[in-house]
Image 1 (tube, rainbow, N blue to C red):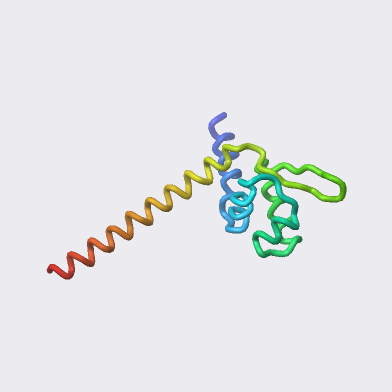
Image 2 (cartoon, helix red, strand yellow):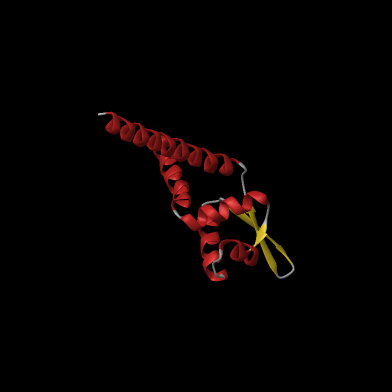
Length: 113
């Protein structure tokens, strides 16, 4: 029964990785905390859109915020999020390279045949 709760939380956490904008935000925050305006500039999106994605990341406990004067800065709550991000990207890159290599081998075989 405990496993079911963990699977459910795992699935919920992974939803943060299902949106390109949230992935960009996570990647940008790798360099340290950023304000909403800095994230908007870095992503090319407007501030309300960035704030919406930050809220979703915050609800998943991926980011935390800190207030300094009238500015709010966001940062990644746990550095292991970057490890998960990098691992998924590594798998995708390896699969892409394998697929390209397979396609090239296949084309080379067609020329020989």
